[in-house]
Image 1: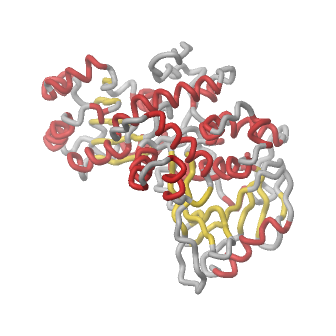
Image 2: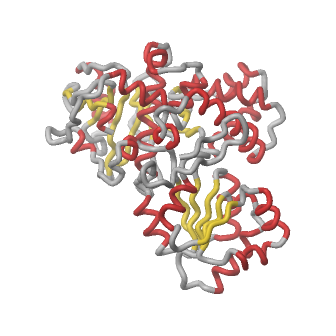
Length: 426
């Protein structure tokens, strides 16, 4: 497999080879949707494997054109009709947000062959721009799905093994041949979940993350929104890393950086649009308690978070003052990615009262809500489930048994109605 040139522009390395390809949970979802819609739009952060996945699934049936390549982008911009004549359906158009002028012409061609499915497979890294363009031009003609970095099951080579909370917390849950140590957990968390880092275990993670951030700043940030001071924006990235898993107070961030609150709002929208951060809203229920209104923010990848915080290994991250936030970020990201790769829109929330009682995550499970807490501890104690039991009492009509995700290796009781689950069981 060829290596990436990190010193210059990051390219999506060729991980199409059969001995390095990592199968994704989204594969059957993508195949099914492509058989139902005239077009499919696949979004996700850079280097999450969008190109690799599309070419892996559709190489035998679809032409391919990358609109990231300057010459191809220029040809498509200058003469969209001729470009689409040369790259007729079925076709994969990679990074299509670079040439939005193509979309009205794609719409015309879809309408001329309305009964044909899977005509255009579109991909892009800029969720905000791409979805705005697609909504305007291809409404009702395309399905939109997201591909994020790897889940634990994808990294383990079991992308289609279904997850259920009941199974994970039962005596019949699969047991690994060798129980992972807390250090194994932290190695996975600190390295992160981008496919290239998993496919190449000897790859220098610090160098990869540094190159990723530089490319992200120089290309994605400038495309989504004009940011004049990239150095200040990088400081904002670090500020978000220090607050990942915490309540987000934009005024505090603005004061620390010396910028206006509206600037921080705009920059946060950039992180969300480029899939680098996720804002989690509180769960609201009229239960007679005052609930905190501020949202929480999470970085989308724990490895990138560790790098921004200056940690260059699992040992540093595990003993740092940010260990609890890093671990919670990893748990949140795992649940978010798992639901997303099922083709679902994750409707996740957190619960926190004004008195400070908090449950990190509420996960929809049919009409019910699964309460989830995260602790970086490798041991489970009954007191860890206290706030989950408080929530279960307050939301008795919708709350299920709860779970405390920990860094240890065993499934253990954490008090009445609460089970302690190892991180790798996710």
